[in-house]
Image (cartoon, rainbow, N blue to C red; front, side, top):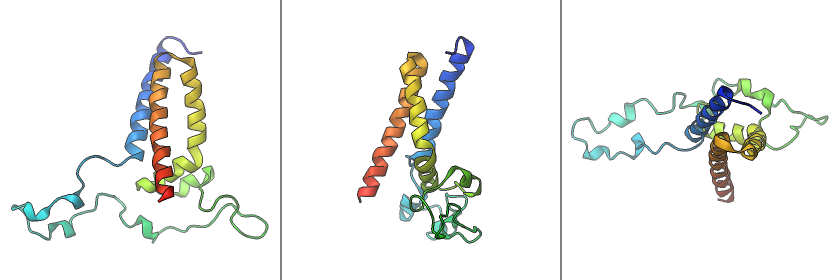
Length: 153
């Protein structure tokens, strides 16, 4: 077990992890530029929204213009092994995580199982760290519910 200052630091780290997971996995509640009623604005030209920079720094990443995507997990028949489209840990270095969809897929495919396992161990230890780990688990459970809901539709 950890004691003293390292235990306090651990609580802080878990708090940051919880905030990081929430920010990276869920939509920002701020109003999006595309949902603003530009007709009600009198200070700008009506076509300004068409010429503004997108919210996503790499708006055209989905088109994969500059990405060579080669399957890295192959079996003897030269087919991709494993789940269809699932990421592996060694592929992370070559993936752009600018969009939320990719971040969510990486977490689901690679990190979700080990994150939950280790957070459950911290919850069992109890104390302040257990409370923070429990809040991280709540974020992950919310994430899993959204994934299941999106897979059903």
